[in-house]
Length: 66
Image 1 (cartoon, rainbow, N blue to C red):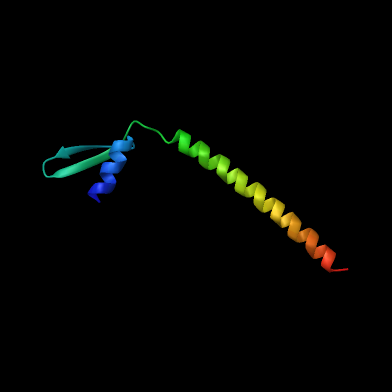
Image 2: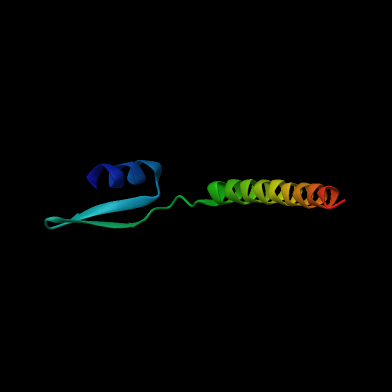
């Protein structure tokens, strides 16, 4: 767990502070805007490909009905 938190802290996604024996985590300053934009583009690409695949399957299915 400590390694995961350290990685998130280095990336700026979380900030930690020591309170007694406990380390408190909070959201860091870095936002995930770039990652969210990439995910949106990737999601759209996948949707487009699935739409083309569905159209191809539907077209080929109609050819087999003849």
